[in-house]
Length: 203
Image (cartoon, rainbow, N blue to C red; front, side, top):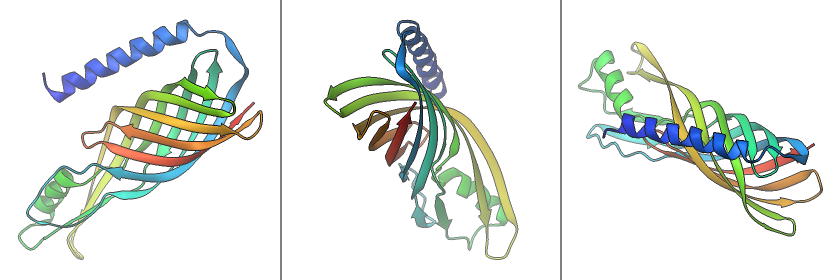
């Protein structure tokens, strides 16, 4: 079974699980709507090795904006996330621009941006402390741009859909406001981890 088949199987199972949980949790919470902003740092798990790599920058600042609809047992989440930009440099002495671009495409870490759709399920609560698990989809886009010195600048646009998993720990400072930390792992070909401070307002 190749990776593409595995990805489709995981997506199918996640959709079935999300629908099943949603149907069993149709009772609305007292404050069903929420909006959350997070700011953090992302890092791509670069596994490519190339003899001509001279520099790799696979971390950057990240941010996201997310809207939620709270049911009795789960919350439906829709948002937008920007995981930043990554960079890789190769020794270009033996490459023409097109060949160099193809090599960059093959090894460049991807810190994407795009829309998210997922669910959040409570795992633990103690007084004002809350821990919740997350899973969903990232519908992402990315541009890979390369240039040799002052030569031709080449750009390739790519897009895909991948699964994410995460956990968040929050403290309710009031009835409406929660502040916490969030960890997510976006399952791209080279997974991206993201740790962020998250502020959530419920209304």
